Every structure is written in structure tokens, then in C-alpha cells.
Length: 196
Image (cartoon, rainbow, N blue to C red; front, side):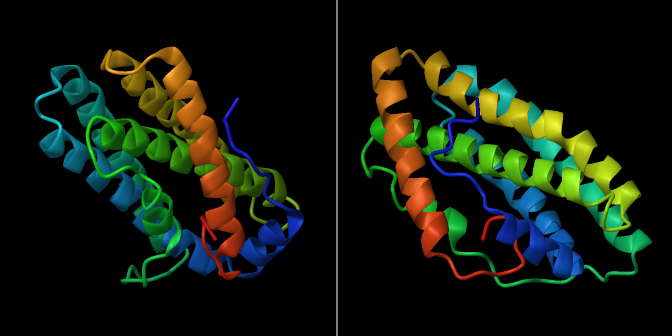
């Protein structure tokens, strides 16, 4: 369903549970970056009017999640602070073509993959947190799952909505970028991150 070419192993969940404060702080920044990405796409692709409203709605929902995660940090007395960015998104986006319209398709599909990986890992957290004595946090992550899956679908739908790409081209490129995403993830150092 999510179109990922690899599955997160149990070592990620163990590492995340062992450094939960860092994962939560990273997650806050991921939500902020997701909102920023949607807004940047609105500016970059203003000549594609069919993208504007869905991207605007997505940006607003990502900001709502940012605020929700800020509250989760505050409840745990974790101060919001800057963190060094993970290399995941930059390396994933490095697989995008440089020329249009291929760059548009690749960017939308990479955004879909980021949302898919977030969804997969939030599910792992939601499943593991109750046994770790964190039922409230598990509830929070369960609440975010539907939105993450919807965001994944939104980016895929936007690729189809432009009418610039055939269904076969989208399917083929999505599979290629999913393989690229799996390689990027496998090459990252094991850090307490949502995407590491």
C-alpha cells in the first residue's frame, strides 16, 4: 500500500524507544519541514493551479501536527531546540531529475515516500509504546497514522492530477525512487531519528 521497497527492522524500534525524547524532538522538526515543503512547492509550481489547494491544505495539516508535537514535548518537559538535520530527505531528493517536468514528478513521488516511511515508523511506535509504559504517546501516534497515509496518497494523486505523466511512467518512476529511498535509508548512520 505504501510503495516502500524496504521494511524497517526491529532494531529501529528498539533504538527509538531507547532515545524517545530525541525521536520526539526530531519528529517535531519533521512536521515543520513537511509544512515548509508543501509551501515551497506552491511557490515553485504556481503555474500548475491544480496543485495549489491540495498543497495548501496539506501545509496547514502539517502545521497542526507540528503544534500537536510541540504540546507533546511540553508535556514531557522537553525543550524545543534546533537539531542538526538528518541527511535522509536531502539524499532522497538527490535522486530527483534536474529538468522539468521530470523534476516535478520525482519531487512529488519523493514526498510521497517520506510520508510513507513516516507512516510505517509511526505504526511501529504506536504498537511498541504501550509495552514501554507510554500509552498516551501511543494514542498520539495512532491518531497521526491516518493523516500520514493520506498525505502519502495526496502526493501520488498530485502526480496524476497534472496530466503530464502517464500512469505507466508514474508507476515505473515510483518503483525506481522507492529503491533509491531504501538505499538511502540503509546507508544512514543509526541515529534516534524518525528517518534514520
